[in-house]
Length: 90
Image 1 (cartoon, rainbow, N blue to C red):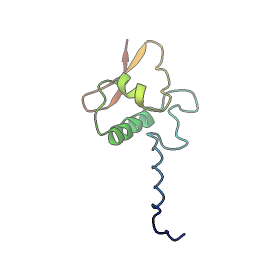
Image 2 (image 1 turned 90 degrees about the vertical axis):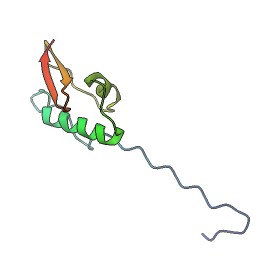
Image 3 (image 1 turned 60 degrees about the vertical axis):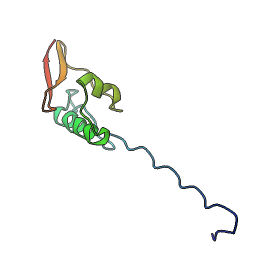
């Protein structure tokens, strides 16, 4: 549609927010266990999209935008200094 004199051009629509998780990806395996490699990839995607390191696994989980499966009984998730997700005893 041609612009008419005196009328401003229509404003561009803002870009849709991008998800930190690949569409259709899940963090659990078919047997219900945590898919640790996919959880690790989710952390890396989070770092890239947020342009910072999370302060802790809890910081990542609270802002990840995806449901993080609960750890196995007696375990908890941690992030190592090199951003690897590990399960450790509580």
